[in-house]
Structures are given as structure tokens and as C-alpha cells.
Length: 161
DNA sequence: GCCAACGTTGGC
DNA sequence: GCCAACGTTGGC
Image 1 (tube, rainbow, N blue to C red):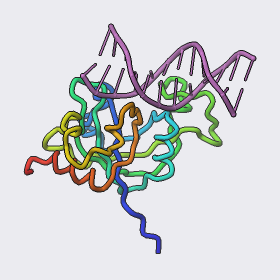
Image 2 (image 1 turned 180 degrees about the vertical axis):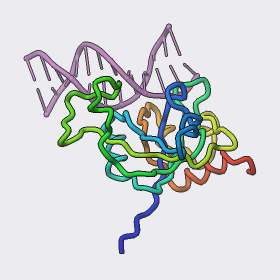
Image 3 (image 1 turned 90 degrees about the horizontal axis):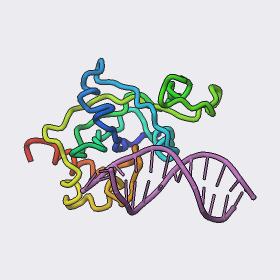
Image 4 (image 1 turned 45 degrees about the horizontal axis):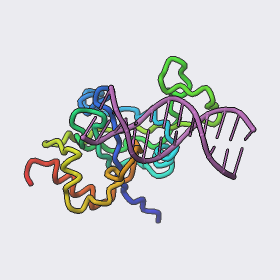
């Protein structure tokens, strides 16, 4: 019996481009997480993300970066449609329809955090010292989170603490 | 706006 | 296969 284990992730989004409020406005709270154009991030999504996996939704490149809420993987990897759309910012003329270079997953909002958890707070929270997000020079837009890191951050994001 | 860090590209 | 140049990311 192959019992898939739940994995934990963090995805970044610039709230000016797509915020957790935008996700909340989607029908069913579901969106196609497309436009990922980094091989390491793609490989995580393609090879390891599975429906049900939990995802932290992080706001980056904004006045106050931090974790805004939680989502889950609603659909496993499929070809990112934007790579074939010349009108899209994600257009990649080198990608072949028979062997798509880039993939997307679907994400579904679980809940906005009751309390936004700023990056500065993550940096001073015990137990998060090894988080990929906090590593110097880290630019990954999709990265794994350990179960204990997930627990700590979810607790920080809930009102009752 | 600055700039460090990093990934990608392309000449050789 | 090396590596310099370039573009992008993202915190500050």
C-alpha cells in the first residue's frame, strides 16, 4: 500500500500582481498557479506536489512581506497554458506543445490567517532558523516547508496563541 | 532606488 | 564545459 505523505510548501506572490484577497475572490477559492519559470521551483511542483499538500501563501516585494494565509494543492501538475500564449507574460516560444517545458498546479485557499505574519517575525521565531525562505539570497518562488515549520507558522497566524 | 544574490544565456 | 555578461528577484 502506497500511502502518500502530506507535504508542506510556501509560494510567493507579489500582492500587487496577485494577493491572497485575489485568491479569495476566485470561484471556490481556486486558481491556476501558472507563470513559474524557474526550474527548481518547477521541479518541486512537477515531481513532489500532490493534491492535499498544504501551502503557505507569502506576500513578497511589498511594504510588509510575510505569510498571509494557507492554501492547499487542488490539482497536481499540468501544462502551464500561459507558455503557449504569445499574449501572456509567461509565453515561452521555446516550449513545445508535445513536451511542455513549464507546468502549473491548482491552489485552493484554505484560510487567510487571522493575523498576518511578517517576515521580520519569522526571522526572530525560534524553530524557523533553517527555513529555506530565510536563507540568504533565496529567490525561490516555490519551496518546501518542514512539518514543524508549518506548525509554528500556522500558530503564529492564528489569533489564539 | 539601491544593490546583493542568483539563474540563465551565449560566445568561445 | 567555462565563465562573463546580463536580467531578475526581493529585502531594505
